[in-house]
Amino acid sequence: MQLLAVVPPLVVMLLWGVWWGDRTVLTVLAWYFIVLGLQIISERVTLRQLQNVVWVMVPYIYLPYRFWQLYEGLTLLDSTSELQWVRYLLIFELVLWIVNYAIDVSQLPRLFRWEVQSNDAS
Image (cartoon, rainbow, N blue to C red; front, top):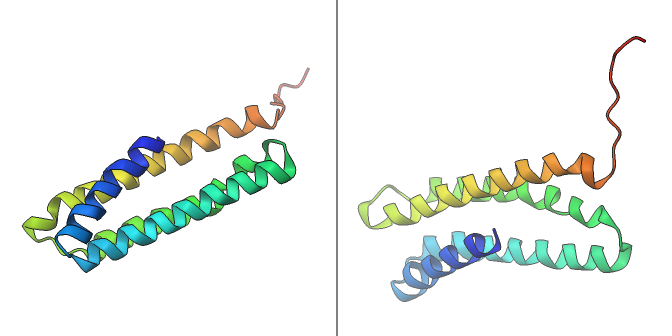
């Protein structure tokens, strides 16, 4: 997850945003990395301070914003042919983060050892 969430956007930001000077791509992906960095810092601080599984809740604060951020990036980039690969990357990242979010949510009962109660009347 970390490799796919960092390397492709970083390459695209450096090529299209910095090397070829597309300000929209640079803006979208620079803010993506700023928020991703804030999330990682928050996770580390929470893990060090609380020293329990509560740190896994930190992504639930950042991921909905990331969904919106990637969607807005798609709307900011027009559908010109030279930016089509950037749009594909944003769609890929959006799907990747949504899948990651679903996996994270599915792990909550196990992490917090929530009991499953049946509705059987015995």
